[in-house]
Image: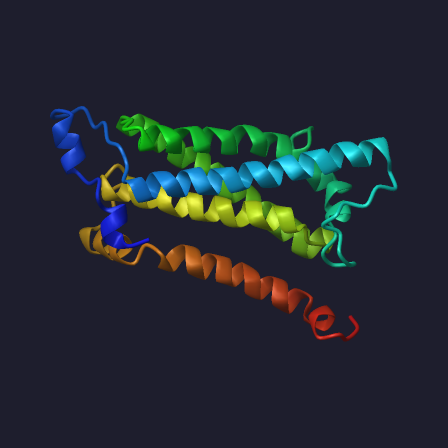
Length: 216
C-alpha cells in the first residue's frame, strides 16, 4: 500500500465539499484496509464466540486453536479477563468490528464524513487498541497463554488504529508539526510494522524455552 494510494484523498476533498464543512472521504486503499481489518476482527470474534458457547455447554470442550500448553484458546476463554465488561469480550468485537466494515464499505461507495465523525472514530479505535494492549499484557504475563484468534484481532486493531490516525493527521483533524506530519504520511507503514514486531518479540522471548524445546 503506497503513500500515493493512501494520499489520494487529501485536503482537496474538504474544498470540494465547500469551505468549512470539513467533510472528507477516503482513498480506495484506506477504505479497503478498513473493510479487511474489520472483517478479520469479525471473523476472530465470531470463531471465539462460537467456541465460548461450546465451552459453556461442555466444560471439557477443547477449542480447535488449543494446540499446546502455550497456544491454548481454552485457557484464555476460561479466564476472568475474557469477560472484562461482564460479558464475553468477542461479543463487543462483533459489534465494533462490524461498524468498521460498514464505514469502509461506505467510503468505497463515496461516503464523506465530517471532522467530528472522524475524531469519534479515532476515539473508538484508541479505546480498541488500548483494550487489546491490556489483553496482550494479561495474556502474556498473567494468564500465560496465547489465543491465535485473539492475536489476529490484535493485529487488525493495531493496523486499523494506525491508519485511522494517519487519515486524521492527513486532513489535519489531529494537529501535529508539519515535519512530523510529512514523515508520518511518507512512512506510514513504519509504526504498525514496528508495533506488531515488538509484540512478536515479546511473545518469542516470553516463551523462548518452549519454542526452543527447553524447560521453563
